[in-house]
Length: 151
Image 1 (cartoon, rainbow, N blue to C red):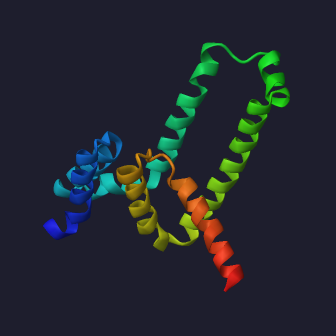
Image 2 (image 1 turned 90 degrees about the vertical axis):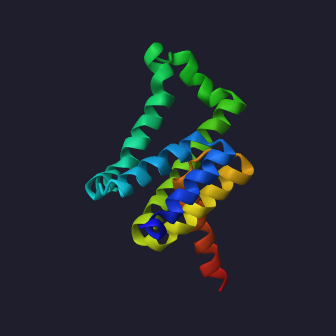
C-alpha cells in the first residue's frame, strides 16, 4: 500500500517543505482518500474537480464585478488603453491555449503525469502557483505540434 501511495506522499512532503499549501492540501486530501479506501470520492474528484476549480477561479476573478459592475467607461477603456488592450489580447490567447490543452488531455491522457511533475517542479523550484495545468497542457500541445512539423 505504501508503494501505491508513494507519489502522493512524496508530493505532500515536498510541498510542505516548499511551503506550498495548495499542492499540500490536494496531495493530502487525495492521500487521505487512498488510505481510507474512498475510491468513489477519488472518482468524483477526478470527474468534476476541474470544472469546480474553474468555476471557483472564475468566481474569484468576477467577484469585483459583483461589487459594482463595470460601466461603459471601464469597458471603453479596454479598447483605448494599451495595458488594458494587451490584457484583453492576453486573456483571449490564454483561453485559446488552455482550450488546446484541454483537448490534449482528453485525447492523450499519457501526458498527465508529465504535466503533474512539471507543475510540481514549477511550484517547488520556481515559486509558481499550481493554477496552470491547462496552460501547461496548452503549451505542451503547441510544443508537440512544432515537434511533429519539424520531424
